[in-house]
Each structure stands twice: as structure tokens, then as C-alpha cells.
Image (tube, rainbow, N blue to C red):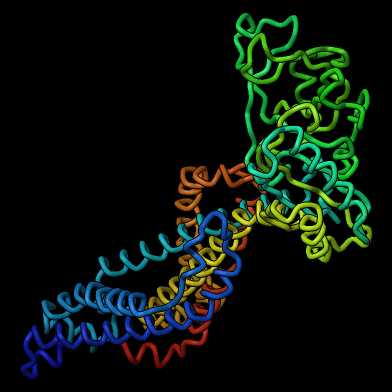
Length: 506
């Protein structure tokens, strides 16, 4: 640049040339980015949870994306090429030519500091992203291994909405559901068919107030509510393998003309009858006040995570559907062959045979519902993991580039050290030390960012702390190992310096 200026090139011409080169490199990077986007958009859309991000299914690389990429690449090229171009245009021509002739580095300390600061920042960002991805991955693994209180294997779930005109009364709806369950149990391949108001996963849960006989909730200063109030058929707990811990299950004798009963879960029993048996105790459910009947607790079952897969089970009660007004129902069918999805067409035909005016809303397996419930954690882990991998790649390239540049500009110094008796291992250590210092500084900055930013994903974590030591140490060692490899690769030319040639060039 100095020679060009001495031969008559104006500062403006130098700036235009350097900015043009920067924009060309930036546009090339933009094309590579578009290629990666086109290759990855389909897998990412397939992994995205449709229920949480419906619009994500329409994501594609279209004209607005192309224009945005072109504008961003051009702007990046101009911004990051303008500063060094202006610095080159304002340089002292004679000082620059003297330094170049002496073989010494022409970059000032300000430039080197900026390079090192960028590398430290890249390492820090890579650490934050990879730690976040590691936490989400561990959380997802914990979810896959978690016990939700029921067994989804081999269970088909069917949602039926009752036609109010055809079934205007509670008695009509109970009679229809009785006929439907009897017909479904006769379908080949079905071992049992039961009903519940809302499924334990994927369906909204209703919270209702309740009163425990002989207990003053106001005096205890607690909220009088349950996490869920479900209406079920007698064999529901056996169908989903929910364990009976005490008392009895519901039976066909628990009809509208029989004494009202209720089954509670373990969490409700422990909260409202700690250290004693809830069997025979009575509760009122709903907001009917004095008009609400007292329900006798006849059984205690295991806890089910029906308020959310990452939410601890709350107090839940189960009542016979024949003793209340059931306006919709979810059916659970246990498949004999273990392939419940194959029962879908037969189930739809069975519903039409009983009453073709009652619509079937959804048909899917409980395993599919659980997978959808965990889709948010899986998608977040994959997405942040990809960003973390790209961040690590950028940090590696930054370390390699900065140290390679430093080795090239210290060629004369390194050759002189070898002539004066320094061993190649000592020369290599000088470069490795600089790379490790940059890495350690980036890891320290990244750990500070982890402590402040990973708490933002706490709601996505399950049985793992946002500051999990194993994840922090593992990711830090991974980044340190990759950075060391990049440092050694960039430092290799330092031990291959020809001392005589390096000194003559100086």
C-alpha cells in the first residue's frame, strides 16, 4: 500500500481497493452460509415442535432471505474493511517502507490487541453456547429416562368430542361411552379400552377447588385447589399401569345412584393426610359449596406428571365418569401386539358403528405424545448445539489465524533465538503460551457469561443445574483441547524457521 501511494495512488483509491477486497471475501462467505442454510433448513424444520412454533414449518430460503444475506454480507464487508483501509491510507509511508524492508511487523500494537480481543470473545461465546447445549442435552437425556407415573408403551389415545344435539343429557353421554368402550374392547388386537376426561400428557388440565372434611384451609393459610380433577373409567389405572398403593380401584358399581367416591394420588394423600391413611376420608370437589356432595376416598394411586413433564406432580383426584357430567372423553386402548398405531382405522370404524355423529378428534399413541412433549427440549438442544459448534469453529480459526500471523511477523526474532542457542521446543513454547493465554482468558470470560446467561434456559432444564460442574468442566476441556490443537498447528512453522535465512531477511 505504501508503494502504491508513493507511485501516485490517492488515499481514496487505496480505501476503495481494500473495501472492495473485503466485500468480495464477505460475499463469498455469504454464499457459503446460504449453502449451509439450504442444506440444514429441512432437517431443522423436521425437528421443530409444530405445536410450539407452527410458523416454523413454513421456513424456507426465499427471495427475502437472499436479499437479507446479500445486504448483510455487503454491510459486513464495508464495515470490517473500512477501518483497516483508512488506517492504511493514513500510514506514514517512509516508516512503513523502512519496517517492511527490515522484515519487521507492520501491524501496530492496537491491531494486535484487537485481534486478541476478538479471539477471546470467540472463545467466550463458544463456551456459553456449548455449555447451554450440553445442559439441554443432559436435560433431554434425563427426560428420556424419567418415570412419568404411567407406561405409554403399546397405548393408543383417541379424543372423542360429544355431539350435544345427539347427546343432550349426562345420562345420554354416559350410555354412549359405555357402548363405545364395550365395542372398542371387541376390536381385534385391543386388550382393554378405558376412558378419561383429559390424557396425562398433551391435554390441558382443569384445576378445581376442593374441601377436606374436618380441615379449615383458611386457618392453614393455603390455597384450596388440586392440580387436576379427572373423570375416569374403572379400568383406567390398569390400562396405563398406574400402581394402586392403597384401597381399591373404581368398579362398575360406582354409578350415579351409588355413593360418590374418589381416588386420590400419593401427592394429595401426603399433603392433606400426612402420616395417616386417607381411606374413608371425605372431600368436596368443585365450587358448588354446600350443594356439592361429599366424596369418600376409596383408594390411593401413584403420582402422574400430568401438569407438565418437568413439573412435579400435584394433588390430583380421580372420580368415576358415571357419577358426573362428562362432555368429552379421551380413550386409551392397549394393543395386544405392541403396535397401537395400526389400530387407528379400526377404532374410527368402531366409533362410527356406535354413533356416526360423534366426531373423532385425534388418534395417536401415548409414546408420540410424550415425544411431542419433549420436542421443545430436543429442538433447543440441537439448535444451540449447532450454534455452539459454529462458535467453536470460529474460535479455532481465530486462534490459528492470530498465531500464524504472529509467527510470520516474528520470523526474524525466532530465527535469532535459534542462533543464540534456544531449542526448538522453547521457541514452540513461546507461541503455545500465547495461544493458551488467549484460550484461558476466553474461558474465564465465557464462564462469567455462563453464570449470568444460562439461567435463561432454566425452564427447559430437567434434573440438571444451570451451573452443573460436570458440563462446565467438560465443555471447558473440549474447547481447551481444540484450541491447543489449533495453537500447535499454527506454531509448527516456528520450529521450522531457517535461522540463517531469517537473520539475513532482517
